[in-house]
Image (tube, rainbow, N blue to C red):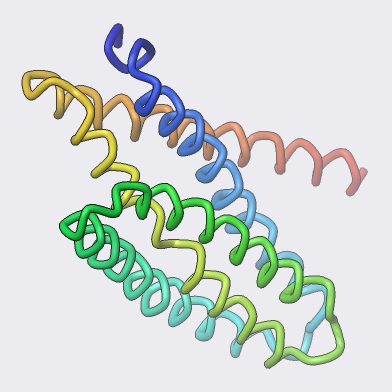
Length: 171
């Protein structure tokens, strides 16, 4: 833990992971309720579409993020991983906003959700790679474990907070 908090890269990656999981879990909690409320006639298409989006777009994005970060690191462009993380957050925010704020067409919202996953899920491979590149060899496993722990805590807090907010507003 000492190296995790002493190493600036690890510290910022852990903070970023916490926030990304917070956002990701919030989306996972919120979207089914949102789509059910806004598009009540599309419950089945949403469930099938969401499963396809998360599986296919999430997988493609994760793999692509790792491939691109490795390719450009080998070419000496060391900030590529940071650019991927930053770009994924910005593009994911824009496509998520379009998914939820334009409420006139179910299929448009689902396509924006697909783009959100494709744009936003490519961050974790570069982050783990940055962590592994900046820590001592004997601590790599423990620090990646700690990173995933802090990230999951962010998601857990998001779910608890979202549930409390929904209970409050449903009352």
